[in-house]
Length: 344
Ligand SMILES: CC(C)(COP(=O)(O)OP(=O)(O)OC[C@H]1O[C@@H](n2cnc3c(N)ncnc32)[C@H](O)[C@@H]1OP(=O)(O)O)[C@@H](O)C(=O)NCCC(=O)NCCS
Image (cartoon, rainbow, N blue to C red; front, side):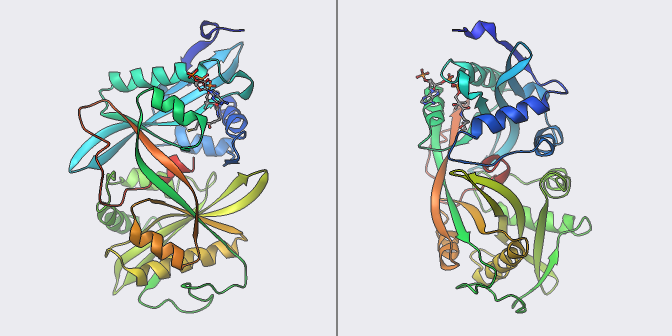
């Protein structure tokens, strides 16, 4: 059997993206639920991401074939009024025939060294608490800090669901408009202000919002709707369509991302936004909608349940502390959901 020293350790080089993407699909394709990626998606997700550093892409290669990867990107998070520089670990993949030979462990060690060299406050990632990868992360000092609930709702064309506006019915309490480059600045301001109520959030720059919502047009199209009342933005939400493979079946899924209201617990505005996103999802023939929320978002959970959503699974956010801060301290507020890392 090969030993780890038979594999060349290196960072991303232009041209690697095809192999890295194929590796992701081969490795994650072994999981019962996964989101296949296209090459365009990988290019957008990493190469086009503001601040992307090729040195954060760790690869093992043998004979010109990339067999294992770990990708680390940087994100700021605000917790208890302190701002932390975190490395986010994604795409932990090894080609299935080489599982169990220590390849992913080697790359995780490299990603930890990189975080230490950069003086980061911690490393974070999202994992299935039932998956074997969770145990690897525990071994490397990652601790469970937050649980996220996955809510789904099946959609059918003609149904009028509890809590939802009927198709064609005028929204009460506001006017909906699509996000454009012209209203982006206004949206960013309200989006960031509303999200500062959440733990682990750090304001998203215009560059990042542009990348997430406009630069992804080809790879991962989205539509964002803004709700205004008396000219003022009172909420918004984004719809993206993603194919999810669950237990062998492909499902065109409507991801409902970053729904927010500027006033806390504003069920009226939330209902108008959710109805709009579901209406658009039906137009695109999605049989299912998915929304992810932190486990302590009681108001949001009840709101989704009353709109016909059911909780189907959960993910755990783990952090490996690299500073003295106690990341395991319980938090009362809701916790920010970084969709780009959770439905990568
Ligand atoms: C998770 C994954 C990257 C591990 O890669 P790997 O190169 O096999 O990892 P390692 O060889 O370094 O194994 C690390 C540990 O996991 C264990 N392990 C690896 N594959 C396993 C499996 N299929 N079932 C149970 N344990 C497994 C190893 O025995 C080892 O444990 P040990 O250190 O106590 O001996 C790989 O299984 C994979 O690509 N899975 C699909 C993608 C995925 O789910 N990624 C994680 C997302 S959070």
